[in-house]
Image (cartoon, rainbow, N blue to C red; front, top):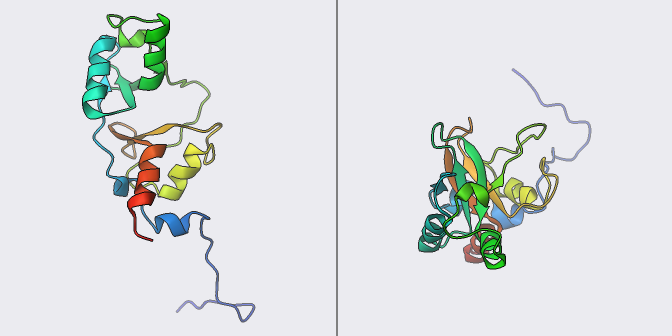
Length: 165
């Protein structure tokens, strides 16, 4: 039988996140992120915009037509600016406006449905392997084979607002 050895009269302490009181053990799954909506690089920008507007999405993932591998994303507010400035046209392909993921030399933080919300908030703020603040997170399965959804800072803020104190 194993025993716990204590060197003082205090009970063993547990380390908690400064955000633990807000999230109380909740995970990304508790955000109930909507299913991912992905575009292909050869889709027209107008089709991608229409899909984003219909679902009120601010980000769309872009996946390979052949392998369904995650290639990048469309930031809809940024896309509107590109259209306004004439950098791209509605008839252009998504690949002309998408922001590509840099795969070489970068380590990506895997965000799954089981990721604690404290970790997600740290990711948005540039922590937990992040080099800079992020606007959204691509939620995948553990093996990163399937895109399950997209979580945004706004989703996290809404979760805290609707959660009873």
